[in-house]
Image (cartoon, rainbow over all chains, first blue to last red):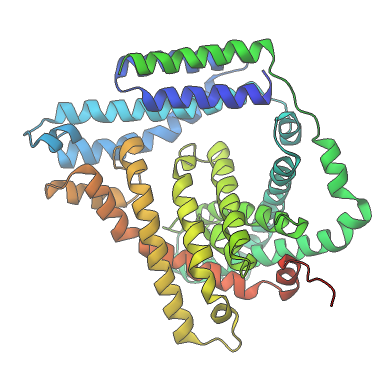
Length: 238
Length: 204
């Protein structure tokens, strides 16, 4: 699959999950997301585990609020019916299944590009050069900032200004970490744009590196067809 | 509109939105702070208001998409909230840039403008977020605000009203903190970088 196909397929499955209004159509979309994951020929357990890990805390919270506290489903509240905890639980299950499919669709799409670098993925996208340049710059600056966070955090902990765990000191001084990271990043960026990039002609080289738009492959079209089937199914079963 | 320094500013602010999530997680703060980069981008590119709006929106959009791919797959659904924040920042909050950079700081004026624009940003964000919170999350997003939603539901409010009222209760506080941090970062940003973001002046 090419990056362009991946974007369409992923958005298609997510759109289907949003349109689907009952557990049957959501179950069909779950099967499509699973087929997408297994189609990558990679280990899917991590994708399943990550998706579950994202949804489980939400599911716990929703159950506590809807089943434990409110005790009835939204449609029952809307009609003024007395309602039941079973209906509330069924509503929570529907929302959680939808959220799980969305998370799994993203992870399953990622699996098709295991081993690709972000630069290679951006290079394969059919997008204007400015968009590709912007995406690459952002990814590069995220790396810069992540390293700045690590360094600044260690320095501020060593100086006793913030702590490793939750504390009042972190609430009071946490913004110093944000400011340190910002100033580190901006100093680096000023030096890069003013001197380094000009001398090395970095931006022109970057444009060349991410140039080229991959066309849709046959595999892309097949996957897009599967996603379109999922959307049609979700609409048909509403 | 998209000069190289402005592209860099957009990328920097998108990266800041992404990195601050990491900071909040590392030092375990009970707040989100995920829009500071968006607000800061509008402040830095002002007084070109149109460019400030476009650049802040793009920075916010890239931030939520990348965070959505790597950290939380549900963040992109708040794309319209991010655009609303960019709109308020470019049209209103950016009017306070002189106060935010005034030396020495004028504490009363500074605090007043932070509070005013923070509350407006919070209200805009709450109104735009409420339908997403209701449809995608069933009104419960996994934060402490869920209990505020539950309280309003118990009092007989409809789900959308409860999510909206909950947002209006909590968002202004969160967004005032974000405007405060963005203003402090803007104040600390070197003038040299801000000068790079201004459009080139024609020779006299």
